[in-house]
Image (cartoon, rainbow, N blue to C red; front, side, top):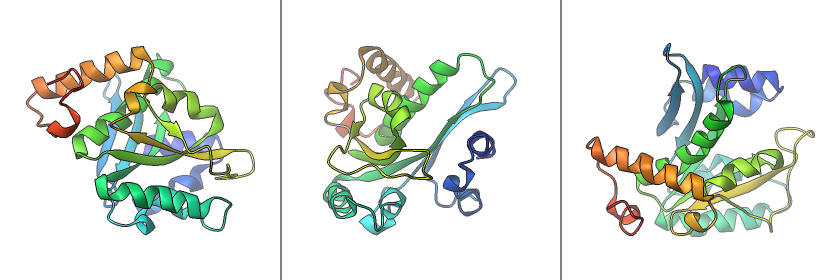
Length: 204
């Protein structure tokens, strides 16, 4: 979270992290962190959920009063019975080597989080300039929901979501190969993965 705060602060968007609310970890189900050879955190992300009600989803709450709010709520409410988590706070240090590879890893980490938590869907919001990153690992844009200026007028931000049943048709071939390899490593290490999202993906 400190790494995320430093990066977000550089762009003047620190408030979007709600750092003081989330730094105790109670609202986070899973953290993903990349460490360099010195053990310094150089990239990360976090996930909340699974959710039981649409009102718990921060991304949906951030759309309150905006065009498309009802459509966004309906989309997530329809997904909740099959499991919904929320991806947040993706970041990479500005001075790190291989930054592009770390950005791609963050995108894959959101897929891994769905597998690890046994859910079908993940929802979030992303500025338009970052969509290539999330699409590379299978995210779809809710194109029927108008973009907002969240967290401020410099950005056009749109709802995005992943579906474990369809993400492979969206993701790039290179990201799919890495997702498969990384999930195989999870299994080889003894990590128990929900079979519903492993069977039929070339990993079982």
